[in-house]
Amino acid sequence: MALKEPVTPPFTLESALRKVQTAEDAWNSRDPERVAMSYSADSEWRNRTEFLRGREEIKSFLCRKWDKELDYRLKKTLWGFRENRIAVSFEYEWHNESGQWYRSYGNELWEFDEQGLMRRRLASINDEPITFSDRRIL
Image (tube, rainbow, N blue to C red):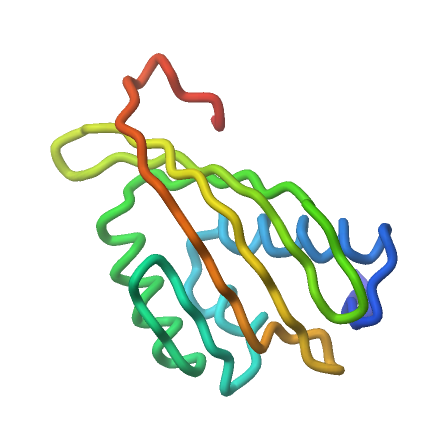
């Protein structure tokens, strides 16, 4: 299987859509190593009220996240793009140890370096308790 060329800025509609789908696929793998490799070595994040810097902090964060957010499933939607930036909206569903399901909604602003690695991610997220039967992302 041939490796695909990395998606690099400046983005077109096609390349922005591919970048969003690639991110969704990586996050749905729930593999912190795979996800972290999409970010530059010195990537900066704001995730809710946490501020992270670099792949190691990102990997540690993702391990904590997926230890808490069980059976995580995500859907990302392209909101807009220009040059080296992409904006997405997203929702994901997960449950905690006691079985309570949640739908988490949010928006992300992404900025990429010349190699197509994300160097900045700003995420705003809200959680809503849902029932198992309310799930939409299976």
